[in-house]
Image 1: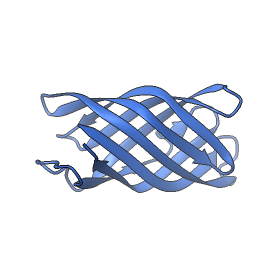
Image 2: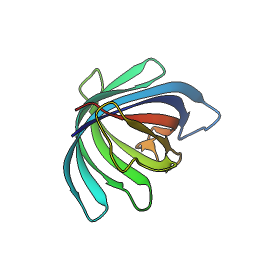
Image 3: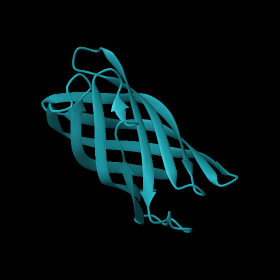
Length: 135
């Protein structure tokens, strides 16, 4: 199963939270294993945009907990200069994850700050991010 995560929100500078930039995220994750009410996922591709900066996903792992309705992703990113950064996304599912997630079906997740962040640079907030099954 493959999921597409896409949304837009705001980046808040860690040094001065009054400094804000528009942000967007698009990630593709592969569900590796589902057991005991949770799914282990691998980030296969994607991008994070904050203001004019673009970061490309270079792998990552995560977990979706169906019981608590939480999603946590740890993603390695590279910028245009090939510098590596770490992205942490902590999300709370809006409502429930559908018990039968057919291709094309989706659910919504709020990735909240300060738990969601581009480490040492930006706190991130992505409300109502869409998670859609693509295959």
